[in-house]
Length: 121
Image (cartoon, rainbow, N blue to C red; front, side, top):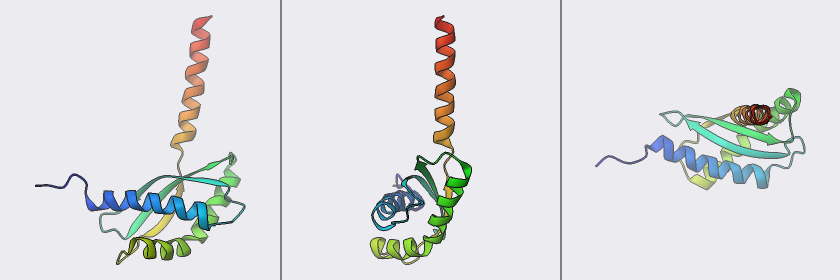
């Protein structure tokens, strides 16, 4: 009987939960602010993970790049903490990227609202 979820999917979900907790509780850098781990994509061999994050209140590209740099710098600490929490033989290398989907969603919602108002008049 085939499994419902593949191992990379299960690992990515667990990594997302653990990273969200670790970033919230352990990283105290003021340049980060509020960080949301939107998704984690893990390679098939579980060696690499791309972590998609969003930042509350960081709208400029410079602020986002600064926060991503902080997260990338804390990658070693996060990998060590993940290794202890998950007890995996090999913890994936973490690469952080800004998730632009939410920003695009807000833009689309604003455009839809503008169109609705225009149609109502």
